[in-house]
Length: 620
Ligand code: ADP
Ligand code: MG
Image 1 (spheres, helix red, strand yellow):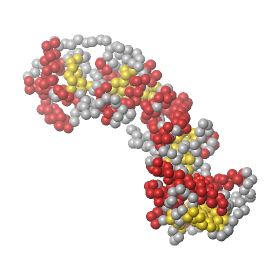
Image 2 (image 1 turned 180 degrees about the vertical axis):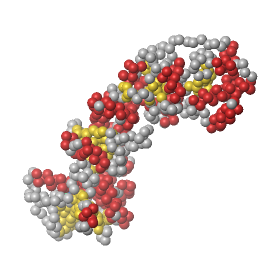
Image 3 (image 1 turned 90 degrees about the horizontal axis):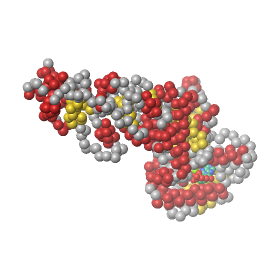
Image 4 (image 1 turned 30 degrees about the vertical axis):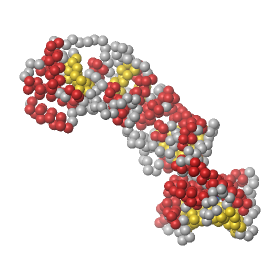
């Protein structure tokens, strides 16, 4: 065979400038494409060998990647099945380049971002970084080796060469604007990103096998950059807890926490999916740790942006999902409506709740200990996924300030007798901050009320959800009302003051404190209760907090200031005494009482606090 030249058959005259332009941000994926072609070729050869079609010993099958800075080349060499001259014409000239044409068509019709970073680019992506590409290949069949060259135009040459070794060598003559791909560290980090778990050993660079060898100045050994048999590809029964933990460390070398537990996914019907999902230790009020799940397709890294494949709340998990069935080279909006993706979604969600239920049943103590880590995303899931809510109800926990943990059903049973109000509503009392709400907690405890801790950022939404699903169950923060009103029962105490005295008392407070800030109400409480209490309306407070967090509330409370409730205890001796004082004293005392009430809510700040301190000295 003499040198043959030809024209690559594509509709678009010169596709390469277009590819280069559109894929500018993602040039690096050429390496993933070429290495996975090398892996495919090697796997195919192994397959042929098993069928008896490729004869003899296959020998070492390691894929080699090397840089030659003098020649400006990057070479990917495999010992796979290779190609004959006819096969190069067919698979490279016709197939690879016609799919290039299709790709450009697609780019024209879609948002280019939708395609970038996904599969389907193939061999020609080499031209994103190379001004010339050479293929030296020798088939496992008894046929001469050939060299194919193309400089990025639509013309190619094909000639016979002598090449002893079976397999394919792709030589990229790196273009001037892509010189970074001649840097060892750049290639190394790309291999680490995309090829870390490819199933065929990949060699790049050299290293000493051990520190001793280094001291003894032994020669360098080729360095294998990947782990061809990652944990998720093995049977769960073949793995120990340590294997799972080690694999976690392999995935996240910078994360020093141990995972809480894990789920090994292994599905083959109605779609193919394997993987391991880890429950990480969440930092309190999750400083967002999303995008830790890595998506692979036959052990080739695709993306760590798995938003469409995994339900939103599960993106807090870590780990690996590998599926050849997820359509990767299509747009995100298509993914969202894809039936397979929906099924995968539901499957993963079910596996997760099954696992949680299993731990809850088998080792409730362990489950309770880990609740502060897992609670957040269980709640997140219960809010955002109806089915997950139903499944999680039996293990979602409510921790109390006394360190007991109740499921909702257990909690209801526990408090039914003491915490049902006169209208038959079950009132669940909670605190968001035990220090800040200390005095309210004390009073509630004296009445024998249980107080649960709901102190994470999504608890407002979580409570809302529970209230919606459970008629006649209401959550109230301990400072939502004076203690005798938190759970209103029938008994009403009498006031020692006359109607006239009460009016006077009310006017006194109204004239001496800023009326716009608080609603003033007189109540005949016990003389041992506080003389004046500030409470924060549950509904208003919750709505405003949710508004602040962004969305979630169907009402508009954005620009509004919260109005406080000021309850004056008409039966407290201090208030009776107030009525007999002169005007200057009255003003001082009313202000002092109001400030004290604010203080116990941790709401006295700034100038008001300074004034309070000054006034306190005066009064002493
Ligand atoms: P795909 O891998 O999706 O088939 P590519 O454009 O990456 O598309 O490759 C086109 C074809 O070229 C492959 O299907 C294969 O037949 C052939 N090919 C590419 N690289 C190699 C290689 N290293 N060894 C053997 N054949 C190869
Ligand atoms: Mg390919």
